[in-house]
Length: 256
Image (cartoon, rainbow, N blue to C red; front, top):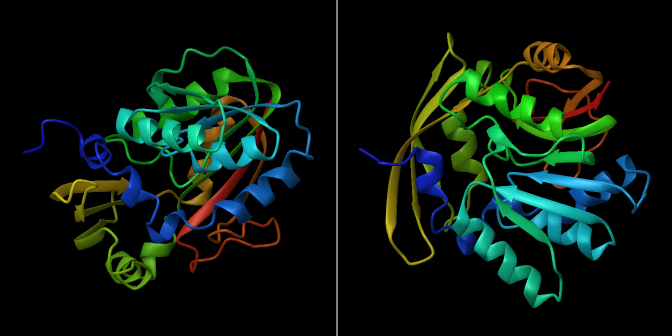
């Protein structure tokens, strides 16, 4: 039994390997989309929630934006700081829990991509607290852009098959997937080799959300103008209507 929650154990020593995962290869295209959404306004203060190894924060900083990146994993943050230093960048990376952020209307924009902690938490209440914490840190009129797992996908497809087909030979694997129709959680065994070569096996579960749930949760917190689209790796677009073929959904909401 793991002493730490599976998502904490997963990211302890997984920075270099994480950056080689198939699902982290769309950074350039995703930042192109973010720039469009931000109107290329480089005066905006941006919060990167669950920033991981800093791939979006670093790329946006290279493009002239001002980022603060937060993550629960010191291992991921250390790798992010190393990468930033190698490119001569100074980025405010902080070890913080996304459920308990200390910010109060400080940011114009928040991003939370590639799940970014949500929806990895053990309970729906914990996931909700992340949304709640982020809105507190946004200025009125601030924009929240994030991706999350599409609950429509596992109703029509095997998550285990999808992950097996999408992954490479050196990537993490997911097996014994069981999707619970009552909780909309996918339970699986996640196996990987960390940066030191240690093989790790974790009992993990992730919460999938349907669009109407996300809309209701965000509205209940005071978000307005909620738009949801299909999220294609490295090619986010407002032209992509969400379908049952999309593994992830892209959510764009504004704070009242």
